[in-house]
Image (cartoon, rainbow, N blue to C red):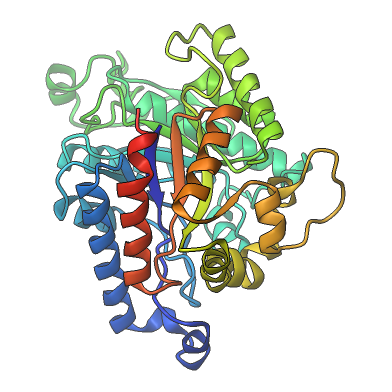
Amino acid sequence: MKFVALSLPAIPATPDERQQLRPIGHRTDRWQQMIHENVALAQMLDDYGWEAYTFPQHELHTEGHEIGFSMALGMHLLDQTKRIKVGPIGYVLPTWSPVRLAVETAWLDQLSQGRTIVGFARGYQHRWFNLHGQVLGVQVATSTGDAQDQTNRRVFEEVYRILKLCWADEAFAYDGEFYKIPYPADGCPWPAVEMTKTMGAPGEMGDDNLLHKVSVVPKPYQKPHPKLFQAFSLSEATARWCAREGLTPVMLISHPESARRNAEAHFEAAQQAGRGDVKAPGDDMGGLRQIYLANSRAEALALADQGIPGYGWRTFWGHYGFYEAFRLPGQEGDIPWTLDSMERAHYLYAGTVDDIKRKLEEMVKACNPTYLVWWIEQGFLPLAVVQRQLELFSEKIMPEFVG
């Protein structure tokens, strides 16, 4: 396996401080603490040989739970480390202008000389998603297949297709449902005709002296583009789509039986697409887990209860459903947001070093993913506790599973 850490990142605070200092997202001193913690963790992961340090894209969290990724944060962390890759898992594509995202991503890849990755998501948080999506009339994904969900998926896939065209070498035109490139689609005025005809990308200018194609610069440092991930995936249909498109799905589904089913579906679709790099179920897939290490399972569960699985899911993430993530085979209805349900779904790993080794061996046996993505606790537990967790894992567990 390759090992990837996911940080929200979060403004460091206890639950009481989040109430007493509301809105803690306005506090510059806590922002500086958050930045310091993420630099320290990135450097630690870098020293231990982790593959990547990643973040989701979320915004407007005055409560300080999910600050999200920015190009500025990515470049700052890259400047403070030596070899680890940094990037988002992932950008919520329906909220982005595809050409602008292609440019920003290529800049980060060029500045870091290929030390970035890119992940994509459809989006589920109304407060900021609907704000950005209002121009296209797109709202959050519902995962129900209703009209809103279908529109969200159409925008997501169109932005994805345009991104791939932007990163390719050839100039292109695109006449889609949501975007026209260039604009107007029948030809864009461009007075510097001779300059572009003699110095620009071939095909940009037409015989009518209008711009009929664009060529986006910069191109990524990595060719044809950085490694692409899809986050955080639940369904077999998404696993198959990723296999066809060449993205790495990071699966939230964690029960061994369900994880194996998705890995087999991904492998089957990859073979049908002629992908020679996917040689067995689990190749080019990832699994998201939360891991807590201590001298006993009880101590580890106490840490989990103070952190994201306990406090975080009770106060925030549990309100968004995600029942499919923790549903056992054959189980129906809503799933209680408890540590027990997360353990039973094999999503939460809590215990001693030997306990976690057994859990990872179980994961390898079930679906053998190329990537383990560990959602770490930055911001919810003290930095020293998080560092000790990473130290134990990196020194006593990771060496047995690398490769």
